[in-house]
Amino acid sequence: MTECDSHRHGDDEKGSPMVSIILPTYNGERYVAEAVESVIGQSYQNWELVAVDDGSDDATPDILSSFGQVKLIRQENRGVSHARNTGVKHASGDLLAFLDQDDRWLPEKLSRQVDILRQRPDLELVFAHEEMFLVPGTEKPRWLKAEMLDQPHPSFVPGVWLLTRAAFSRVGPFDETFR
Image (cartoon, rainbow, N blue to C red; front, side, top):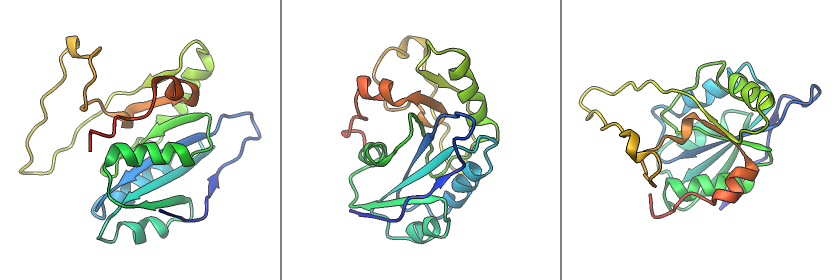
């Protein structure tokens, strides 16, 4: 595993909590720059972006390295769950967010979620809605049913979460059998 220099974006002068954004990647050259740009474009500025490249053999690591705001970790291919867990280990923030390489965030995503956690200290996780854009020729995913919400399921979308590190520690790491 190799690690590039860390870059912390923004500052903490207003007492804003640091958000560590974990970006697992594998051969993501097609969309990963858009994902990173959606983080850079956040109105909430106290964040660090930890990208974990999971053994890509395309231009993904070079694309990530071209962004000065990215802390890049490279590892052998072990799957997305392992990459997320590796990212959390290298993260320094009290709040954790996850972004997949083919996802984009709207500019207010972090700001709104951090505001909710500030207003509601009894909460440890907030989530947002998602809108799916499918590449032509791909299959539409099946949607989760309400009764599935309390069941372990690999289809939950971590990219809409913002949670405290303490909550993540209590729940435990991502199940690495889901690659």
